Amino acid sequence: MSEEELKDLDKEVKKLKRIATEKASVLHDLIEDALPAAFEKLPGIAQETYDACKLWADANARLAAAQKG
Image (cartoon, rainbow, N blue to C red; front, top):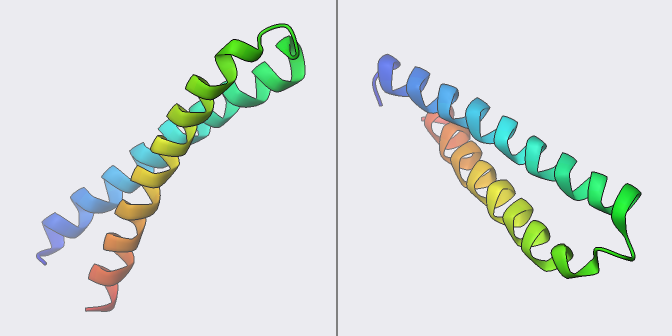
């Protein structure tokens, strides 16, 4: 992997971490402020948070592998 590709992947990992953190914040706010009344929103927000975290984890693993090799 070229240095430019490595920089791009690092940038993507940082972006995905920010998005995952934002989703986690929304989930936290729902739990802290709206439950139990807004329980219907829980599955959707939880899935969005999971998906964002999974995207970050996959990209982070690719970055770690690229940095080793």
